[in-house]
Image (tube, rainbow over all chains, first blue to last red):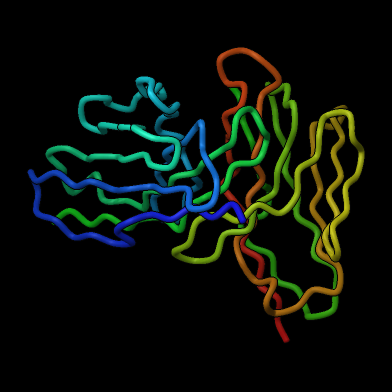
Length: 115
Length: 115
């Protein structure tokens, strides 16, 4: 149980285009989903927290107009990287949590390469 | 500022030995601490959680200790196997304030178990 999927697993796009990444909890309902970014040889950095039906809360330094997050249902959250640039190339990972339980379940990640 | 340090970037050990990984933190009051395993190009997988009032937790060949006086957690893998080779991440959750519930990760330790 507690499986989280992400789609796509990797994406290559041209600079200036927008990319949407989906995060789904497959066998449970996630009241909270988190989005992280991981650059090579670095650890995961939290970008934003989203609760179903509410606006996402962004971490300091993360542009909310660039990284649009939608958590429309208890099993789906999306991250849209708008007007992507090469510096946005990274590994994006989502996680999901049930209520206030302590454990987060992570997706397999999405590798984004912006040319 | 808050800091989480895993003081070995890489650890190489022989199969069958015990691997010990360290996680130190400063300027932090964690409610609990978690250890994750991350394989290359994949999302983290939850291993163990230990709360601030717990000294030790075990799960099969894994053992975690938590010393809030030393501000340190040790993660042990006994009878290590080549399949244990991966990056291991510690993550803290603050006990209060705006950061409650959010995971803050250390930079990870790359463990390689040689046959």
